[in-house]
Length: 153
Image 1 (cartoon, rainbow, N blue to C red):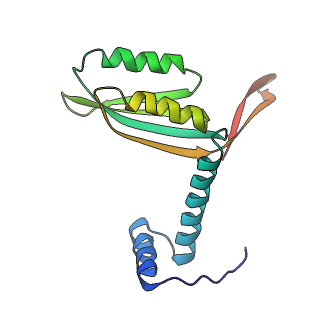
Image 2: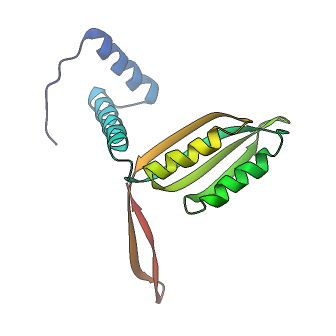
């Protein structure tokens, strides 16, 4: 690890210290390292839409909106290659929280999330993307070879 010197104004130092306290970082260095990692990952996603990634997409769907469940199911079936798993949690009689774990190219993940988020009856969506390297490997699990994907973040 290398040591560098960075000059920050008082307001920015106060914000870094506040974030360190709220999130439980050990100190400023750890806080700044995490902020840099996040900023660099965001820059990579914006620059390279073909970058492989894993992601979570969370949204709230209103109950009783005409054909919403059917429309959401059609969108997911159309991109079944992206969806690893999903969880649906009822919030009350009028809405449910949906979380989907996704894997694919950044461009495809954004298009998929937009297709769902723009449906009538969907609200409060949030997409979190983590750049990843997806490798097809073939090694034994037990006695037989087993080809499958490994995801490196």
